Image 1: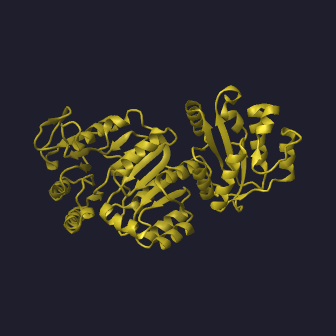
Image 2 (image 1 turned 135 degrees about the vertical axis):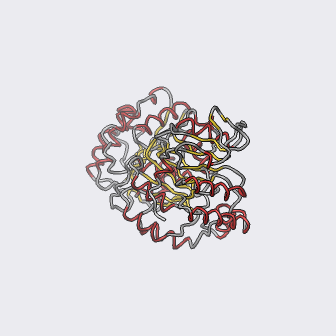
Image 3 (image 1 turned 30 degrees about the vertical axis):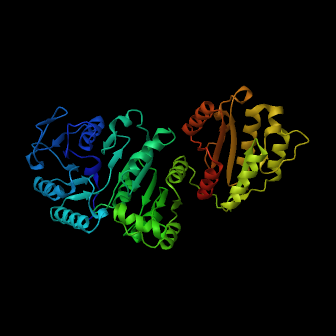
Length: 457
């Protein structure tokens, strides 16, 4: 049943079924979150209350006396069919079911979910969920979810990465975790739960057209329309990252009790992703790390065999990086004679130039910024280098520096430049935020950095 889903992302009016004046309840959180950003009419529906949070209360959806095309439902699962009949009678276009107790709990819940789907289809009502956290639009400050309202005070970080997650609490706790680190901006988040009606395909189609979205990341436990997903991914000009849940036999069994998903044949799924040019992640933070690198423009694959140059101040960290490069199918780039000559001019006579490039001796001669800036510029200009890893130290004394001075002149993003920073906590955090804000991805772990570099190349 195709749809543009516009009434979910920009409804003309919202009925909050299960709204509550009780603090710390899901129905109360829903109202608070909606009121923080949505400026259209909101109708609390609860037969026990004539007023909730200063808004007129309604005993049922059919009693609403204003424009409304979306219901957000947070009532006990057995009450849901009657709520949906009310929505159909009122002529609503969509309903987001943020309650649980459906197919994910077994046969009885599956029967209840099927009943809800039948009611909705017969009444031309689209269903989102159930067993989900709803949707978020960071640019419009829409939070159609029962996540804790007070957590949002400092966490609106608009960006161009959109997420589709077949999960509920993942799109709550995990999103709070990554957004609070101030290195990730989000456009939209779609938590689709059990996918009784609207699935990842329709959300993907919508986000591929969405002008606010430049990168799409998905957590999926199953995909019933694998061929359509592959077609969309192949034709997409927006990069796509997927984290697949249920890869193992045990994980596949666990997904049945999470979102009632049949995880399917993972090797086939993985091969389809690869053919479609989709990047695959192995955990949640890696999915986000890949997405934020793609958002910064590192999506132009150089076509080389993954030749990497390492610019480091420490022989030991260079060696560890090389070990991870080999483990992830990357190779050390052989430096061109022109690059070697440029680096020699900055190095003391006794220092041989190799890859990894140890810039510590050059610091004594030219200072931190001079040594790093020329070293990075030389490696960036080398046609035999597909990607660059830079190690930085954040500290006092002559290590107090403006990292953007080092990166100047390499901003065309023809090849990935990923940075690893260690040092004093506050100084490292400040340096990280300046670099991230200017479009340069920073990592806390060499292993994660190299794995992401491998995915990009």
